[in-house]
Image 1 (tube, helix red, strand yellow):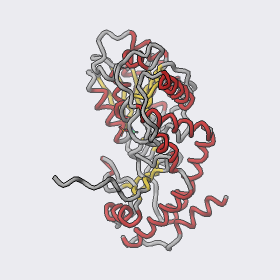
Image 2 (cartoon, helix red, strand yellow):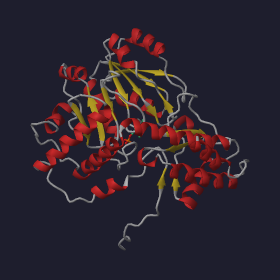
Image 3 (tube, helix red, strand yellow):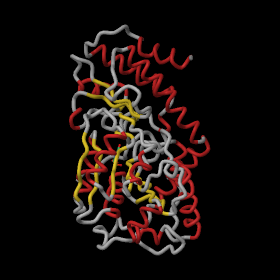
Length: 391
Ligand SMILES: *Cc1c(COP(=O)(O)O)cnc(C)c1O
């Protein structure tokens, strides 16, 4: 075998649906030497991380910690702990990740009833109320920020509604944490899972989860053991609480990373962070509109951190994305499922929600769109964004 060369990839600007670029301060802490996962110093870091996570989620939930795996593992953790065979769950599905919730919930042996609307739309409370009345499920799950469609689902009144029916509310906040308002306690959310590589500007590898006292009580009433050993929160909890009972070796370096990502979030302040995401989104949107590019999610419910837009008629999806990557080192996302080949997804998450990213991607996209034969006034996109920043 010839030994592969030293790792030396071309630089990339990650403006897709995630991972997004890691903040330089996070990269720096990741070079910190390891300590043991039961070292008293590490236990302090764990406590600090949990407390900052609670503040990020705006919750007092004791059972709040990062699962040692990516966002999908968080989804699995919520489903396997809250559901057992024979339980009923309603899954609100209007995109790729809603479909995944149906699949993951179904594998617990629970009966999953999908509530479906066309991709790019958001659910209406009355529609959910009707279904809750008919099905009377133990839980209802929904995606806050549907990364496949760019739709921003309002959920602030949903917990209250679910609790009228004695139903637990599970929310996917993988793409919303650290980007848009999220208030776990105020919105009465019972279980949620997120990730490290989107709004928190860390590498993929952790999935922060949080369970309300109501959810913890439901877990305590289970008749059967949780099907998964690794994701059984009653066991993991003993490691992430004062007991510090060995469960698995925490990914030390990733805890360093998320701790720094959370420090960055709270240094900036939640409200300032959300405002920054809105401002950069508005500039990007103005630029894209000047190029004749439309959003795929309904007006008024478009995510600032994930701009899903329609590939203009006559333009080849793949050739534009290939040119963006080859000539400019910029990654944007293609469409998933129903939106494959039809949608581009431009992420402005966490560290990457910056004017530099907005103006860079617009300039590069203009060059690629000209090559692809799309008609517009060269410079219009960048000018549109600059004008939006000026107001
Ligand atoms: C990215 C994403 C996931 C999956 O997270 P992974 O870290 O890729 O496992 C789940 N839900 C939504 C809404 C996402 O955007």
